[in-house]
Length: 157
Image (cartoon, rainbow, N blue to C red; front, side, top):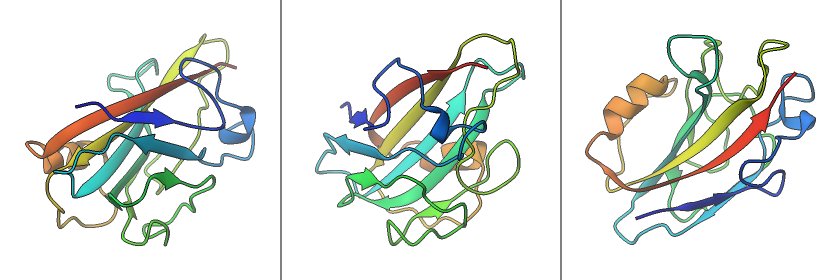
């Protein structure tokens, strides 16, 4: 099954506004989704940049333990392990080794980068610690993904 992920800040394949980047206020964009299957018990989100000049995609955000009754993440989720909304959500570490969202900040002159906001619906409420990185979250959700979807935005300097 596919989840439909959207944002009022940008549409599929379009530029992410400066406000949501390292050149602006560095606020996470508001996100919403639909199509969560009845078998889902929890959601997780990973945002990464496969165009980064690194061996692995550069991770911008890891948030998980999002309740399925939640259909939106507000703009500006605080960069703390337990942001308070959604109530059970936990945030992990990005590629800067900090917690929460860090917006696009590709090397100057490196061209257009793509940023994938990947949402996963899980068939199990997982008992996870705060501060997981992308690899740790992917390992934990393996075998529990019942649907996924993504929204891709771009940015360049």
